Length: 67
Image 1 (spheres, rainbow, N blue to C red):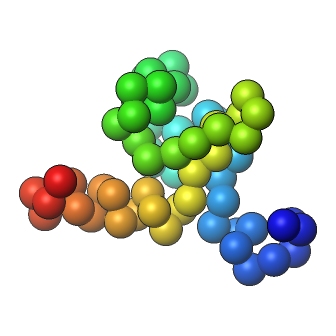
Image 2: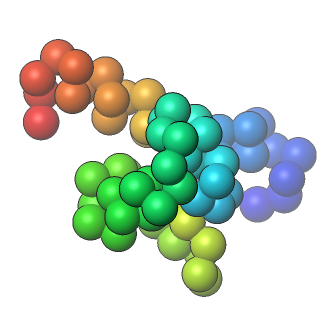
């Protein structure tokens, strides 16, 4: 997938970007949450990647109590 595709704007690459997006000021805590599966994301090689839309949905579900 090229970087100019519409989906490229939905992808976060790296713990710093994911941490900032979810509003966590501690990247180590974000990394821990990623490793434990508390944040829906995956890895491309050694880089964590996450979808902004999936993260929004995940946190919306948590606030509604839907797991």
